Length: 144
Length: 144
Length: 144
Length: 144
Image 1 (cartoon, each protein chain N blue to C red):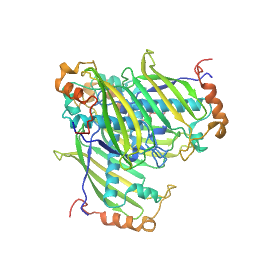
Image 2 (image 1 turned 120 degrees about the vertical axis):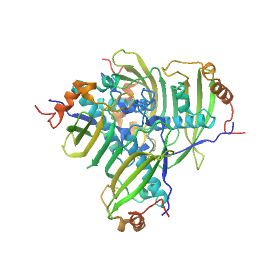
Image 3 (image 1 turned 90 degrees about the vertical axis):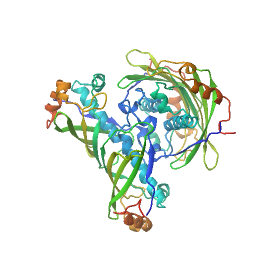
Image 4 (image 1 turned 60 degrees about the horizontal axis):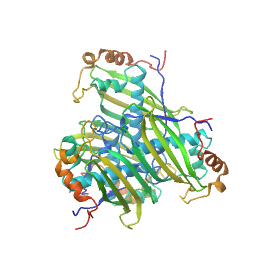
């Protein structure tokens, strides 16, 4: 795979009175980065949902390394750490677009469910999704 | 009717870097006030939705009179301006709980729809809701 | 002026359980469109704030014409309706990027303040900003 | 200490099109629970900020055990796991108010900073805050 990282500019309403991005927004950016990934690999999330497949979050971990401010742009790169056909775990490196300095390190884990939120084996439900996730594990998805 | 006004304290994450509540949050508070009204009059919104009735917003108007800050509490009072069985219009007065000074004047208009977002006549679909809205028009819902 | 309209894709977390964008988010998109306008005309808002000039919202009016859904992209075009050196009023047309159908009609009004939220005459405080706003009034800012 | 747990009802706009609370909102509820704790122990956060003391988040960890839905009420209990005068770490148990079933397990860690976001030793800056945090470590703050 040779994907593009996800770039995200800080919106005004994402700041709080401390003058920096409220920490809850990072989880939203990570979601945006995941959906961008799914789109880049040809399995856009809106189509997945129409086919009755959803990917809720099981857990999240965030290390807020350095405050991000209004109008700064961050670069989000993902790494597929684990995938077993039922669940997967992604790590994220969020850096400042200009300086390359780390802003956030994060991880989220997820599972595949049907429209009733019941877990499913994605290999049976959608083999093309299974293959993409399997190939992404451990790969440098932004490399050659 | 003799309802209680809706009190709402400003949450930290609702402020922005200007140090005041971001103006988009007021529409959320007005929604909370409407749902509190529906609960007080015995037609809680979650039950309405389970029965396939939803109340989307048609329009909103907000006059931001004075900035509201973290940890301040506002008092929201509603007034049912109009209702014709299909649509209704509510005005809101949002004041500081302590000083009574006006913070926001607002109006929203709504219509009743079914679960497919198709407009419905509420008198046919749910006469008890119709009666409550009809009685609320022009009434001092916080009085005797 | 010949500016580009502002395009905005609907994010997953902007939807609510009705399956459509929660109406409070439109005010956030309009803000994004305003900041994009300021950047395109060479007076980015973060620089303005650093120079002690802020532009709070005085009022907002939204007509929600048609529900917007996850992953749809809207096109936001602005029109400077009024400007008197102290206040200004903008109207917005929000259409679906693909079909061109109207999704939202809106207006917001604003005033210029200093860092203590005290109103200022922008002609004195920053003549270059004054000139840009004056020239934008009534103009087709997306035309030739 | 004998504090009250923090109760929080799910707001409509906190749900997403999956019909459940968007996971980013839990971090906001945890913040509300922390601020409620600070108020109950007599050191309200708005007063702390006025005195130039802020408490940013260093890290967060959330295990989303079971989806929470509109209008459900959760009960949030905190436990002060660690505190060394510079940093502290809190764990949270979020349960359904009615059933007592677990909805979320979480942890956040924080440090004390001044108004320029520079770390401070809270024992010097505000001994009364130091004492409260020291006494909370390992204590059953909802017990006798």
